[in-house]
Image (cartoon, rainbow, N blue to C red; front, side, top):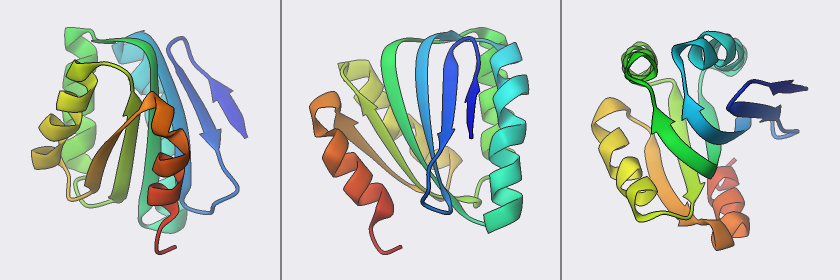
Length: 126
């Protein structure tokens, strides 16, 4: 299954509880309204999910999207087991550190050249 949103592409992989997402541009509240139900559907089906996020030409969030992200994080504080963030900017690496207080997930940043390592880490101990 593949769903395409204005700034987000979600690809549900063959790994049962792992979702891969490609984010680009600047996320809006409408993007969250479109993709959050997809993630919540996976959480309902698997209890705990793992998410691999690839950032490509990513420019952050609008204020409304940041609020939606905060609400999502609080609502699903313990539903995400691992999150791999793959990007190519120093601030994206910092973003991985900022996420840690908002989730019980293990969060790890990988440079875009380390996609294979990110995939291995997200699938580890499956």
